[in-house]
Length: 429
Image (cartoon, rainbow, N blue to C red; front, side, top):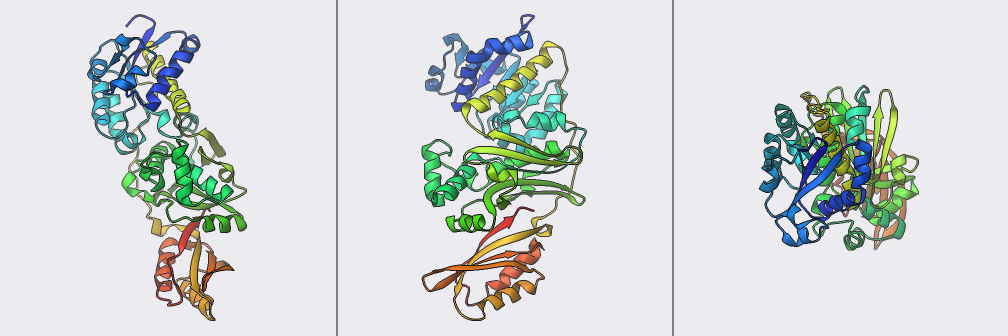
């Protein structure tokens, strides 16, 4: 390596990879001026030659074999943008073992195996950076690592999936069905052709694990996250929510409780006066509650080639600074504490329910009694319209333990006047 040059290799030249190359070519000189040394995009690898041909780089900087980057002693930093668990996990481990710093946007990998890779990096006196793994271009990982390190964060909650937020926005503002809103999101590039991870909440859960690790300093476990997707939410639910002063959002929520971490992803009714309620379309936002700073919100584009590329290149610069100024490891997270986990059944919430029932005397009383038997009291009952010969009934409970609420639901299903499974959405508390 020349005295003032840090060389970078990129693996994966898809949409984000191309965005990284394009942004580097556009802003590389400005970056170098800001850091007072040269950061060079030395090589890009992708098995798909067509992707490589779409890059505005010299032919000698392009290759189809990632080993040319991983085994090149002159390359100091490897950017991994192939996604998924394997072969990304093995590729990153190999780069680290070869003494290279790593930058990744791989949320799945960092949620599942991030801690083992961080430990491997520490042993090899390098570091792994992953700002772009949560929130796209929103500065979030670095503030959690640095700015809030002396504070005690008690809760993180966020809209961290742009696809589902776009869907709910279109349903709310334009009266679209979930299916039509999803089709529109796919047509506009806000949703993948296979949107399973988005609509089932898995994408948000991966990001929640990463945020919880950093926010609480405790080892979050993906398998301990309670996950619910958005498929059960209808336009009617969103309309009723708006009427009683709420919007509907898919939230990732992590809480550091005395009994352990409570981690969950599910649709929620968010009060219209809450800052998260005004986050629309494909935008993301993370709201943090802490002892000293009180309340903070990070807001912006949560995906997209250019916002994500900006976060990736900021990590590249951070890694380059560590290399250039001989800062061994840079700032590496400490080992996370072991922790217990609080099951969803032990948490308390208010619940929104929408039923179709026979429109006859005694039905409301039967519903109320079933909930009262489990000490779940009703705060609100709305009956405004009919669906055929059935009445549509909306209930909102007072705060109750989830397990008690679920037991009450089982009793409600035995009431013969109930003609369909309810829509159920928790209220943000």
